[in-house]
Image 1 (tube, helix red, strand yellow):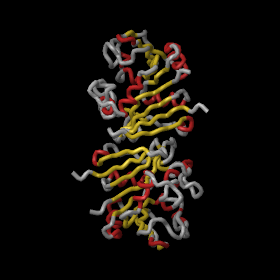
Image 2 (tube, chains in turn brown, yellow):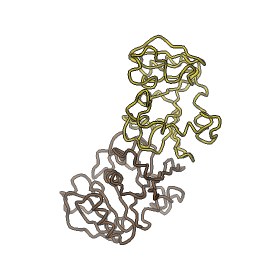
Image 3 (cartoon, one colour):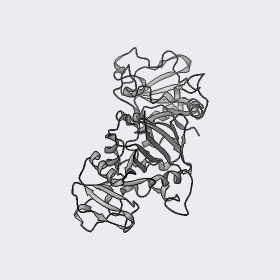
Image 4 (cartoon, chains in turn yellow, brown):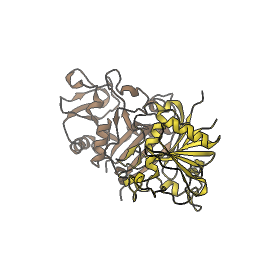
Length: 210
Length: 210
C-alpha cells in the first residue's frame, strides 16, 4: 500500500516550524537557517557533509516518493500569487523531481520545470489533494512537504502514515506552531526518538497497523 | 557557588507541563499520570524499578539541594488558600526534606511537616524568593520545583543555572505550556539531549560560565 510520508520536518523546541515574518529575503523569518543547519551539514545536502544519523534520516526524503503536496506558504513568500513570473524558490531544477501539488485558493496553470518537477496548483481539501497526488504518484508514496499548517491539517485528518520530525534545541518564541489542536494524535502511531550528536532529536511517528 | 536547579520537569511533546482542568481528583487534569510514568518506573520512585538513564537523571533531584521554591498551583488544587486545613498533596512526610518556599498572594504561617520539610508561604518576586531560599539553603543549591508558570518566570528572569526537562511523546493539546515567551533563552545554556529506551527524551540546559 502506498503511504503518505513527511520527512525532515524541522521544529524548534517550542514547536515552531518557521519564525516570523516570512518574506522573500527571509523565508523562515527570524528563524533564519537555524532550523535546517543540521541538514546542510549532511551528505544529503553537501557531498562533503556527514554520513551519520542525521544523514540517514535526511536521505529518506526522496526514496519511493512519486508526488509531493505542499501548502501555498511553502511555494513562495506572501503575495506570490500576484506575481505571474514566480516559479518557486528552487530555480530551474527544483529538488522534487516529481509532480508537486500546491494548495492555493488561486489556482493557475501547471508549471513544468527541469528535472521532472511539475507544479500543479489546486484548490482542494487534504483528502482531495491526496487523491490527486496518489494518482500522479502511480503506486509510489506521497510526501506532504509542509509548511506547518498543511502538516497539521493532514495529521488532524488522519492521512499521515509516517512523520519524521527534527527537533532543534532553540526557542523561537514566535512563528507558526506545528502542534496546535492535535491532542491525542500520537495514539495512532508508534513514536521513536533518537538524539543525534549534532544536538537535534529525530522523532518518527509510524502509523500503527493493528 | 550554589546553583539554582530544576529537575525531572516533565512536558508533553507540544510543551504542556500539565493538562486541564486541575483539581483535587486530577492534579494534572486530563494528563493524568502520563507525564510522570517514566519516573514511577525508576528506582528513584520504586525500589523494584529500573536503574538506567531515567533513574540516573531522576536521582539528581535531591542531591545537594538545601531549599525548594514552588508556585501556588503546585502546593494544592485551585482554592486551597480557602482551606486552612490543607497541608499539601504529600501527607505527613513530604519528599522535600528541606525548607520549601510557596509563592502565594495569600501568605499564611509556616507549616512544619515530618522529615525536615517546612513550608513557608511568601509573596515575592522570583529574585526575592531566590534570596530567601538561598539563605535557608545555607550554601547548598536551590531547586525550583514548578509548576510551569514558576519555571517560566525564573527562566525569563535569568535565574536558572541547570534545567532538566523530560519530554514525553504525547500531545496534550491543552493545559499550561512551559515555553511561552522564552525566545532565545537557550543562548545562555549548553543544551544536551538524550533519548531513553523508555521513550522519553531528557534535555539538560547547563548555564554557560564564559
